[in-house]
Length: 122
Picture (tube, rainbow, N blue to C red):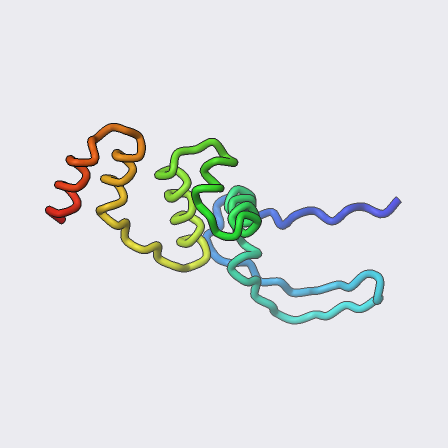
């Protein structure tokens, strides 16, 4: 019985450097290629980041939908998205200071008048 390939054991405990692949095998074509190949930034994602990325793509980049599906708060989802961005080598955008005011308004924690005042003062 043929064995199933295992997922890459990444991140590898105690190792910070990116792995170097030295062999590719195409089993059905009976071809093996040897050399030194770098994995792209997506291949080295943790399983958690990869699952988040798959969901993000599935919902066409809608963080509110990710929030709904995972049952997490928007700030938590945004923090996970920012972590994903850092993992693939991008710096996340600085948060818009208006976002917190809008979140408070959405949750009913401040009045529309208070939100308007805060937004005008920024």
